[in-house]
Length: 382
View 1 (cartoon, rainbow, N blue to C red):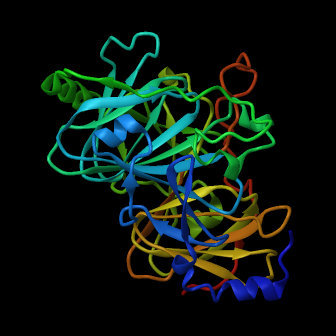
View 2: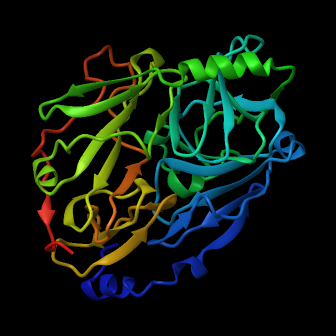
View 3: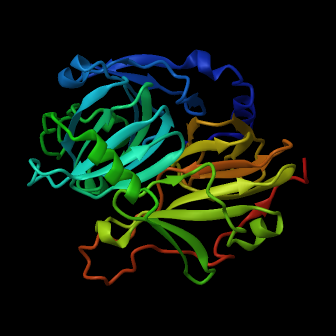
């Protein structure tokens, strides 16, 4: 579907889109049904008793977020009550990105063939971000004093790249659609009698095991986190953007990726930070990418063509939104910060390149040159 200029102009009037959000139930799970252009604050959103019995019995809450734009991502939020000493989890095959939202929690990653052996623990708090190796067993707990809320973004590329039923048909793992190719969802396993002082100490020792490097023609700044490593997405110091137009306007940027020891499918997750009173700089690509506000306030402007009127999504910390398709070729979108403080956001999914099954014929990540995309400056400084 192609939106006319008048239709795109009309989208600017959707200032009360929160009132249009509906909560539905899919296979027992509560799902926020989001309009085409919309946002939701994952820190303040209401959660519901968990639809999985073992998690519900432990007092967990959860909700999925389903945007109108089809995407290979599933996005959901879980909250674990304080003093939850049992680790509850299951194995999964997708690419997982975790971001702490509030409180302080614990996630443990285990070899699915050695579930009787302690795994690699992660202690996380607000804005802490970490990955899970593909095919691992993972579970959450909360031995601390306050509820712990976490955002989980999963991209299942084992089936979905060739699956005609992607996006909205895969919001909840338990959902099945005729013709869908996927394995049965594993049951939850409860792990008890955890040596919590030892587990927390081990997790804290691994939390800072990250390294930084420069890669690609433009020497992009890469933050690489290994198994158990967390990176605070709000406080990490970002260098100047590798893209020339953006660097000239004062942007900062880095890309976060899983460490080489994780045998992780190639995935690039960009961070960007706009200086105060910065102008719009934009480019065009397909929709389905999810964005998360990390610091300050800014907006994303959407256009069907480079010359179309704008529809804007204003965002703040922990606002989540998705880039829609406004034309078959994607959407022109730009970013701006008209405010007095820096504004930082992240893309939760990125470029999928090599799953380590290609005998290294393709590099792990494809990094574009600093002028590899056509960036346009749409407006003067605000």
